[in-house]
Length: 443
Image (cartoon, rainbow, N blue to C red):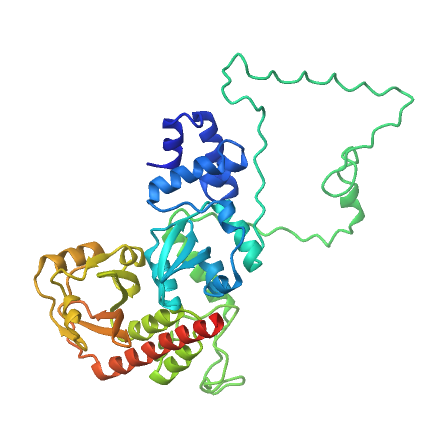
């Protein structure tokens, strides 16, 4: 149930209050809960009851953020905390208690678990409290959001109780004769409107008048218009002198201008369009530098997607987490990144992904006609390709992600499987270095 409906059903707010909070949210942004608290309609305790009931997670109150140790804060780097708006609370055994606004964001939880090496226990928090904690512990300036001014504070008013508008002020007194006379209104030319209209014209000397030429009758059809144009152009271009006589000219040179009498002749050659070839795909060495300089898991995955996208019609990356394969992102013909991120397939189901439960090094071949595979491509909103390539990305024997590529239907190019296996090894090493960097900061 949505927050507004939940609050109205329990009598915590009225319909008018909800509409005003929605208006405040649409105008200033943020979460609806922040607008409700800002307007004074809901307190943190009521909001915590809703969030805990909705997400089935413990609610992190403001007191929970009051004293977080520096050792715990160092487990989540500042850049990651600001990017995902999360704050670590404490470590209990092998679990990292993490405050987050959306505990169902599996990709964020998996990324933090991947970097810390700990199991993440999500605590739901309100936007106000979490932004305060990010400002306190990570020095992220909190955005200031104003509030739409309300006409009255009584929320349950009806038409008769509405405040009456203030009476209009009396008309301004008419200026007396002794007062300063009003300035005359000026026109667009900067002169008074009452000035003579021909005064400016007389100041400009007239040019020598010439007898007007009789105007030709207007053409009635497009054919007559074309005939008149042809006649005028023929009169404008002088006839060439007789061959061999004075003023005779030789053949036109290549460097001679092609324009005559202010127009382009029909015989003038038009410049041909030159198509700029697309840049060549990045090499494995260029990718290595990009992986080396990556500061987060998403940057590594984006580098893999760019490299694979230049060699496949469609490519995607899937994260392996808790016996599930979850879409991270992708690109290519017919691939919608939003639908990819919403795609989830169980690892236990017989599909193209189940090969890697037995430790396969790669898979290249047709897509078996299995229910899970058909549902997988329905979720993606694309047709089943003829063949796919799947490359696992592992860290110390643990399957982290799967790189996917296909060329749709009707294309039979063979991918360089050895190249992609080297790519997976480089990606695995880059991810492992990322973990080691984070552990160094935690010590």
